[in-house]
Image (cartoon, rainbow, N blue to C red; front, side, top):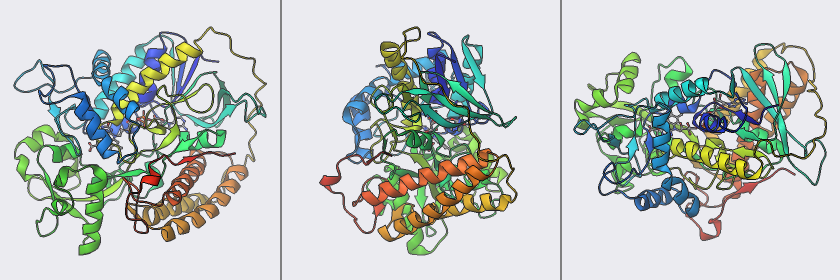
Length: 538
Ligand code: FAD
Ligand code: SIN
């Protein structure tokens, strides 16, 4: 039993763990290796309005708030936006204390170099060249390793949350811990804790084309749903406009390589095959409009011209491109593309889950003792479309806030109600899967279904078709789940199907177009939908 059980080792989970270790024992489990997370893949940076003298003189928290609300298309919770943005400078200080080395200004080494991205009216994105996520993730992992009271467990896959509600209580729904598969031994353990922090990230792998790494399979969201937590706004899946289009790609990494929005922030522009800056026809901010607008403009252009992609022209950056974006440049060279010679072919790809497990401003979910932090959560910061570089910020700020709330309500040492006995894990069948083709086919079908029917532009007809297919897949998953020895592939498939179903069900409920949810059947935004889509399993 640990005082705190943290599930996930990205910015949210590790920020929480490092601070919580001052107050009690912390166990962090992660399903792969510590550095396998969306956090480690982040490129552009982290947005924050720094104190006077360190920020752009024209920038203010008010402007950052206004940009966030504008990108969120009327669905952000303004109080949440203000609180999180106000804590930006504190977040940067904390990350620097833990060893994150943000780039400094070439002309003034006392100041940070500040970048810009789509939807931001000012330069306020701190970065470490174009591998900001790797820099943050490494410093967090190293700090966590050196912090007393933290046990870090790799290859530990959380299967399901354990709550008193699941064990039969109707009056007192509390978290008790989680069932966890040790993937190396195949053993399922009960890991108990009265304080569980879910920091499992997003669900990009529900789509065939995504910028996300393999770990992003919606596990935390699906677990919370099965445990009875409220889930909101899952129709808002953000597509990043510029993923490298690489028809010769052989591995998933080659197919999902992101070309950071920060490249456009420094002056690169999107063009079609004729060299026309077509995004200007859709929004006066052109290539630097918020993501939903740019992704939709690209989708429209691709459908209009029949071309497989559009292009990102980095020539306006000159030499700055290789200096500021060495990782992107080198990686593209590795794929056989020299961006200095030819514009980069790009397509949009699924990138970020704007909705998630409903929490308040303290990370508190609707299940007592269960806190959700980072991309898995829906705090109200992002509304219908997240502003670039607000996610790393949210992960750190909400980790700090969740800990403060736990220390107020149930600090370690305070007596917790006695718990019912937790039954041992019951597995269905010990037989290993005989025909893996069934499982892999289901994976492919799921991701193709979402890609084709639940993408940037939707219709009710396509959504319903997706829904039928997901029902079939859900039946098959039950057979795999109860019929075979559990493997991460089966568990992830189960979670992907549950998450995809929540995306489709939420999208069918929103009979309007707004932010990252755009449907041809209801092309306008409607006031009666100025509210979250909240789903809960009874
Ligand atoms: P993650 O960092 O994804 O961590 C989740 C962790 O949970 C992982 O360790 C995972 O293995 C673990 N986990 C998942 N399921 C289980 C399970 N069942 N059991 C145990 N462990 C589990 N945002 C920005 O603000 N700025 C950027 O520049 C930026 N660039 C991005 C670039 C890319 C290519 C991508 C994919 C995302 C980018 N984002 C960016 C978004 C941002 O990186 C993520 O939203 C953020 O890092 C999420 O952090 P997190 O801690 O919530 O989740
Ligand atoms: C990017 O670098 O373009 C990604 C930034 C983000 O998702 O916030």
